[in-house]
Length: 182
Image 1: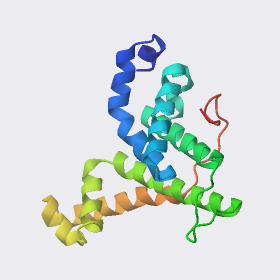
Image 2: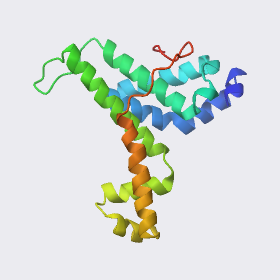
Image 3: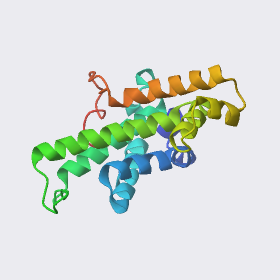
Image 4: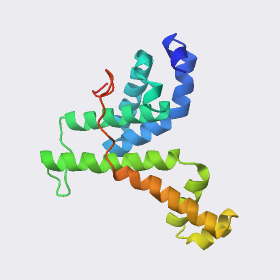
């Protein structure tokens, strides 16, 4: 995909967009809470990918993870630079500390969304049964057609993956384009 983008193949960008547009838009919307702003970030992220296909380093992680990281950074950048600060619960503007706390909260939520959508379908199905349908592991096992031990294993693994959303990713030295707004 990266080589096709570097050659300027518009079809490669279209395939990438079809595959990741909903991820990008949902992550941006989660951070910005604004449909128009999420649309803008989506355009900016895919524009950046189109103009900088060599910025992606497969040794740093998957293409999906890179695009999610670009989206989160661009959305947070947009949130920080917005002329009108987000309103707090009383309708006032947020302090710098409150804004940073909100950014941390939406970053955790965005990572959790990404983790859930990226996890294997059997783990996701078990978590959805437990969370949305309020089923215990026995009921989940019956609904999934697996043993109770397997249902417990899937729930445990899914929750372990999900718990990593609260852990800040390590700040590694990033190549140009990784650590700044697009």
